[in-house]
Figure 1 (cartoon, helix red, strand yellow):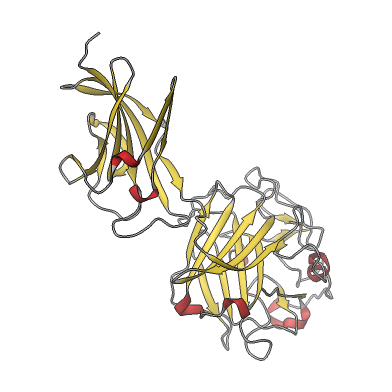
Figure 2 (cartoon, rainbow, N blue to C red; figure 1 turned 135 degrees about the vertical axis):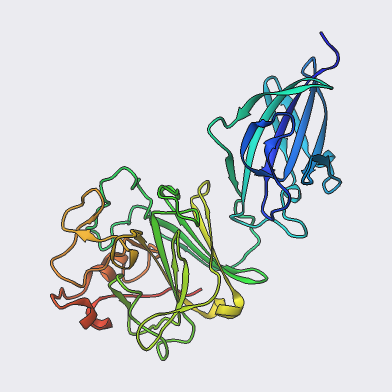
Length: 383
């Protein structure tokens, strides 16, 4: 009954780009800990009759939540339907200063419901209750695509006989590539993996993923230069028609670009961006064009996935004859079996994935004494 009463729904946000931040809400102060440093605040106001009365957009200036002219709050679309509140917020509101949001950027958010009079507000609810929500910017379609491979579902079994470890963390399809794309934007060569299963982060990888270990091999000039044998512990090689000039190892801890070297692969000092999107079950990878070159439509590619394991050979999960809690099953009786679980390979590709990964002569010789022809021979795809 008090006309001065109101409710405020505050969306506390931490977009990329940093800036002055507060870990506390505007009205609750130290009694309402957000769980992250919020830099921006979008408030939606309701009168004592639950009628929408207005909005404000604020930024933390180091001392208080001050109104910000950086965003026209009227560009936010708001719909109230019974007890449901929906907002459509322009991406520009969440972008870093002087820049734009990009695929895979992460935004932390928490919603606080505050109630009281104009003079005295107090926090009544905090959502999510367990901690901040994390929003991931989806694929915005800003990449010019040069290659798209649709891989069949359900072929995440290597040569046809491999089985997932039995622990519940290895959910169905986490190693099943269903799509692989290559493209470019103004500054990067862009690679995108889509998988059938979840892209989660069960073991807290700092790059936002834990289970998958992807490889990409690039042949820029044919078989005359480069290396045929894949990175260590993969136990596979390119067929004699190809040789890789660059190899990308994509994981949640140490994504790295390699070139062939006289003593083995050599790391390139360049940043490899890994941008998982759990909602779309996609992993986007960006490498500066200055490192790879500007002619991706004329290169050949091989994309693979293994299971990441910090205790495995070269951080690749080992195989046993029978699947166990932490080991892939289906290991043949030899030393030169591949640890690859799936290739990005079209359904009508010849030879098949099963044939490529399963056709080689088993050896008892230590792997470091074998050459490329002693392993499974893999092809590459071209745009």
